[in-house]
Image (cartoon, rainbow, N blue to C red):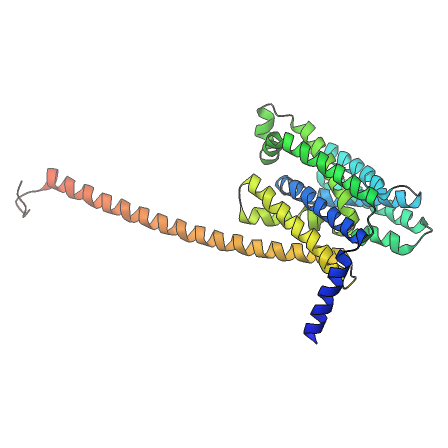
Length: 320
């Protein structure tokens, strides 16, 4: 029974992978994996996890407004996310980031509920903005995602060093002449663009699965920023593309599998990081012990030499 179910699952998946709109969805997932992988390590380094969540809520608001007025959902999500990102960045520079996140999230959710309630069309279409539905992505949305990915990757590559410096140590970066405030606003806009595109796959409620989890997993296994970007991209690709492929046969929402794969990857990386830290602690203890033994041996030799040169008397058995 289990074998027949597995063979049917494989057969259905293989058939659906040959359908045109599914192939377009695979391309969209691959692009989103690259986009998320490039951004997520910097997001984690800058501790912007909840800012991403708030940005996704306003991306939902923009997408819901576009759906209500018959506009392109992708453009609506981008507009809402960019507005949210700029607001959070400006308020964050004034030290009001925590309260700003709560205000922006509640405002975005309130307007989103209003727009979705007023939408006269199919309720399932509106629901996909919350849970994601990459299978229904249009060719125009794929091209928009491709353009967004190219722009963001190019900007991050161009400003990688100052962005990394400002993310790791903003005080030192500002003292060194790096435009920290301008970079913060610029990066917030990039986050808004990325969140807006992620909404179409995993939905606004689970956007953190692609924008936070891959980066959080990557930093568990490497301390190198460049390697973190590579690992984050791999994890995001596996989560997005793998989640889509696994969701085809059962017909379940893509977000279920994307979030599950991301969570499993995070747990595995967390375990690897824990094992490495324990090994590092054991190595440190062994090194300290060896250092102490070396110090004792050196002290004993010094005491022996001192005894020989300055304190030996008639009780000593050795000769000069």
